[in-house]
Length: 145
Image 1: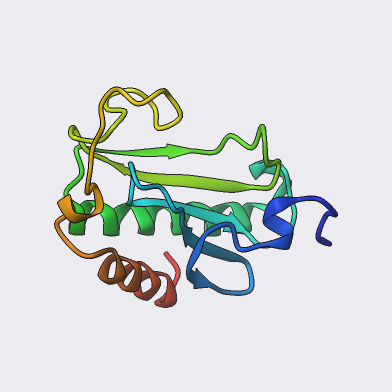
Image 2 (image 1 turned 30 degrees about the vertical axis):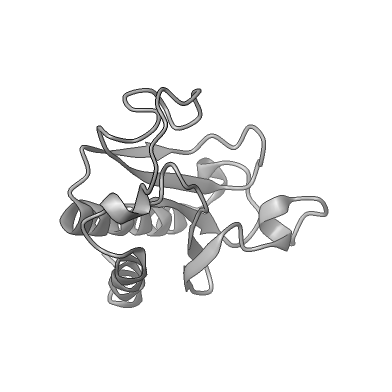
């Protein structure tokens, strides 16, 4: 599957690179209100999860699960939000977002208007994001499953 002209996720990483292999990549989005906001992005351009053959569907969902597991173990969020929308960017990607009761939009979705100002959100996390990133990369570099 070829890159699609004008597709944001075909032509750029989509955020701070955390992990990449032949099939997918994980990036950390730059979001001061939600610092532990990751995306699992399929490298080849497909719009829908069912565009992938079953083994690839399993591959991306295992990656989503590994990112969520690291976030839960390392940051102890109140909740982890998973979303695959693609309305604006129709390139298969999953959002994996650690949410906290103190975050700017809690309990609303991250796309809702802020309900409060939260300064220093990243400093509130249980571990530095550089360590979380390294743990995510290590979990994805190991055996699949």
